Structures are given as C-alpha cells and as structure tokens.
Length: 79
Image (spheres, rainbow, N blue to C red):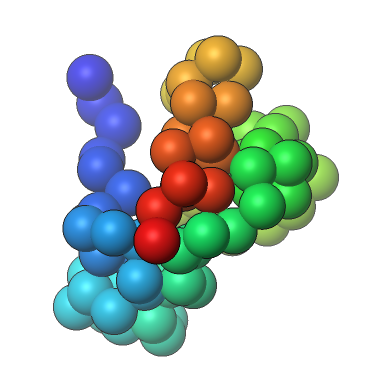
C-alpha cells in the first residue's frame, strides 16, 4: 500500500530498462542477480537517509526491515 512496484523503474525482472526509470534522470540500475547483502545494505541506507536516491529514499523508508530483506533475497535469485 502506497509503495510502487520495483518494476516501475527497474523492470519486471530488475533489468533497469523501463521508461519510468529513464524519466527520473536515467535508467534505473540493473538489479539482476545482485548480492542480497549488498542490496539489503543499500535499501537500509536509503531508508535511513544515509544514501540519497530520490524516490528510493521514500520507497525504502515505508518498507519494513523484513520487506527490504525479502526484496534483496528475491533479486539475488533473479537470473
């Protein structure tokens, strides 16, 4: 609720080639197969405001820690 899908900017499989990502200042990064710990760390940094990333700060901030962990695990398993 109130949280856009990652696919809006990062693509359905996390490939980063969606028009919405380009409209927001360039293609969103490819997340395919990214290490879960790295992704979780970055999501936590966005959520806390340590890392600045425009819409990612707002998105990560409304996610619970368990949701951020689940997203990171899912993306690590994406081929």
